Length: 587
Image (tube, rainbow, N blue to C red; front, side):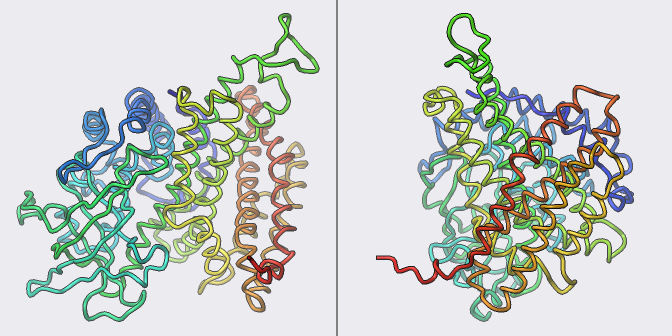
């Protein structure tokens, strides 16, 4: 089984030193969230993840969730761990105190999301969708539904799901067939089948609150006729107590490559009673509140799995002997593999990406809170545009690089990485879903180039580039070599953005073919931007903690020399166009 130590020191560094968003620091609701409080939370989070949840990863992989006589049973140890998890209040961390939550900002809860992803992604998924459902209900449901359902979700006694996909449609939700028939009392009868539903059924909570998209019987075809409904597994009485079973049954559990401890279900809705959330035929708008936040969390899943893969690769490289290096230190014929240049390159590649991603995610967490909570509507909108721009980047880049990092981790472990003994191959398998669910990474790339670069509020990508330019124009002489190099790649991003803009008008196949390359270029440059912010602090505060900041400076140096150049390669590949791709004749 892999070992894991939560990177609390690095997380606290970000919280204490990079909480530099002026608008975020204007939010009154987080004035009392002190460094001491956050450190206490993260240290307790580390304990529960390292000691209680980490062992569940192997248990869930070897004894997956099963469907027995219509009942879904979670792996051994899950029920006991989940009880401790909710008793300690972890489901309520970022929820509104009005409904029993602790009211912590995403600058804190994102760190907890990362720890959980490192410890056991399968276990995490049972509560993760609950927080997504909470956010959606909190933003769009009536006060009556909020008061009836949110306290139990926040407490963790009830869980939530997101029911979109059907056998006939995945990304193209306009094709859905699930129907909703209005009743005289204002409720709806929901009928249809949903597939690939994460945590669709299980034995951890008293009730499961499904958020289901469906088409009312009198609504138009296509995406314009989609509404959102709250459909509980068990009906809920007026006094909040649980009533009889609703018309929902589990048809099967998917047999999957990874995340085997998570029950991915086929759900059948047979005239199940539901309540409309938000406006009729505006269901996708409401559901995207859940989906967009969830996509960022999926990116964090890739980061978390990358972290545990790196930690175990580093430990293994320090204890495994193999071959001699050019500067051998061995007296018995072999050196530790960490002395080999290629192994060191792989490890630094992992480390530089992970720490850069974590810093970028922290920046995004601040923007997210501003977009949700700032008093100035204009400020909220600008932050929202930046979050919208970066959501597909974080979701896709972090998960794609998670595949690269877990693959390299297996390679460092050699034959042991391929066997189940070390648990490294499970990290690869568990992470493989992250580039797929919540919209495949190719869909994310298309969404980025066709919808996110500009909107009704203007040219968002250039506003982002202008922001980066203003924040990386620094006087410190020690950082100048980094900022000079960074400017070169920022100019490439600007040229690439102009190319995308022009091609959108003339040849959309060129844009489609370039979408993934563009996302990667934007992603690598954005991570470099986060590294510049880290470097600025590292040079300014160097004497406070020389060893820590030396590590940061040298890790950043690797990123700028060995990783960031990939941004230019993606640009050069993309601008070759799509003519050969589209004209190629497959036999």
